[in-house]
Image 1 (cartoon, rainbow, N blue to C red):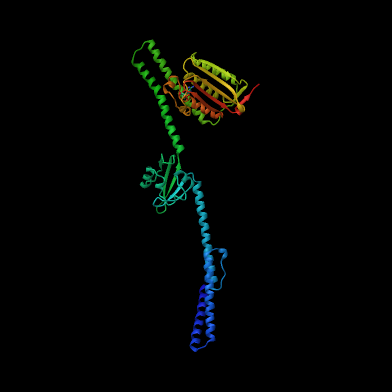
Image 2 (tube, rainbow, N blue to C red; image 1 turned 180 degrees about the vertical axis):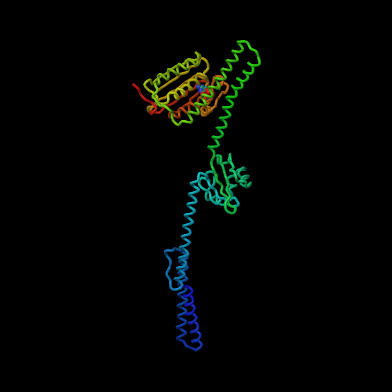
Length: 434
Ligand code: ADP
């Protein structure tokens, strides 16, 4: 169609020019004026359309597509169609990009796209948080200049990417990162990032725990096996034998206590909630604790009971709570030197809460230890703990039981004056009896 219009235009132009030439040669004036006038109109027409095209392209909007005559209309329509298809392609591209973006955002790992020069071409939000990438400022920058870690540089440049690399102590990030590079396309790669700080911490805790348990069991086991060998090798009189058997008995009791505490902890960790919940008569519970403390102290301390809320009872697992209270009382007795005073208390607190507490006049605890006392096997004085029969797990057990009963464990202490361990129970755990 456009070709036809161009041909028509050229033919008219040729006829006009031809007529102009003939008429000029023949000296005709009217024809010359008419032909010249047509030429001027034709040129003005073209210039007008050119101007229209120019101003349309200068402020291009599909809705403002001009209308024209002949070839110009065909030209405008062709541009319109081209622009329309470009617009459609753009929209499709945008949709694909957005779905790629939401797919990468939905992934549990962070995604970084790198070109052959390790320059970042895309990074998902998660990857930005993991690797400290700023978008879009860091697009085009080498990932090695953003994530500065010798282990990562070695991994990326080594090009052996069948296994991920684990990056600890990444400067400025303060987290443990696992990165797996996956090549794609010609020479592009994807770096998949995963924050494994928590998993790494748990793994370290697991290793420490196994090492601690082994160590705690090995010591008494070495003593017992040493005595067994001695009993087999050396003849002993009755008194010596009794002495050896008594020490062996103490060491096996120590192992037994450790295993009991480990089983208690494991049970507490494997069950979400206390298995049985009843209303516990606190006066009876406190009397039993008072009695146990006196038995454990064997007259070395003064043990006082202060039940200031006899009408308040506790709702929970009787066995678990007896174990938590018993641990606090036993610690007070074990760590308070002879002649000290241990006070066991139960009282109402504001808002319907109730508090169980144990106060001692023992050595007290320096403030830097207080936050760590509930960690498994954390002891201030390892020897003192062992001599007094401690397993290092007592307060870890108390912490778990407290959490299962929505209670708060508070520790207040003054070095040289004593300590106060308390469990504050919420209103919904407290019941009132007449
Ligand atoms: P352990 O079996 O060693 O007593 P716990 O978990 O019960 O383990 O206690 C952890 C540590 O807290 C103890 O080793 C001891 O150092 C400290 N501790 C606990 N209770 C007291 C207390 N009443 N007075 C002083 N120190 C205490």
